[in-house]
Image (cartoon, rainbow, N blue to C red; front, side, top):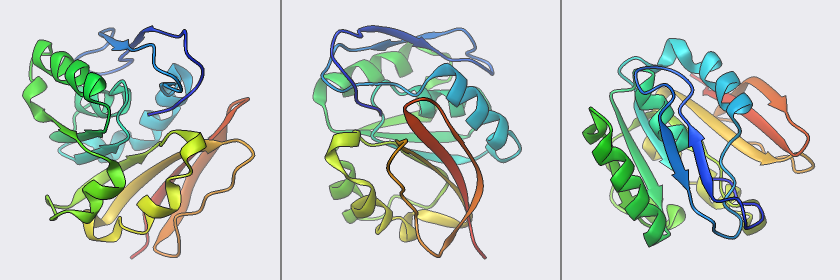
Length: 190
């Protein structure tokens, strides 16, 4: 989930796969800023070979654009974690109206607390795109090892001027920038 200025209620669309063109509502909440279409298209082009049958963890789900896009493109299941109860309601409604949407599980929780709870299996792909002002990357990244498979992929989205590295267990695969953000895809080493 990305966070920016209020007044941006509307929708984002799923850009590829079986649900291509489906609109996902975006609430008018302070700081909610879904990953742009262009950035998502780039990310999912990078991830395409890894998506078939993958288990996906979308922390800070927001509009659900990353988790639903992964499912649309072949992921087996996605666990979307969002702390805002209104956004969780919207995510559940979106999943209910999508054919095959039961592959998405929506959990209302703070991502850092969620990662400290009992393990719910290991994931092949993890999206970490927290509200930028909250500075949550370090706390989340420190807990990811137990939640990821040995060859997992990790997506990080950060402000352009902020350098975040996930640690020695991860190797940079690809990265890009927009005017405001840096997006990077890592592969678990080993």
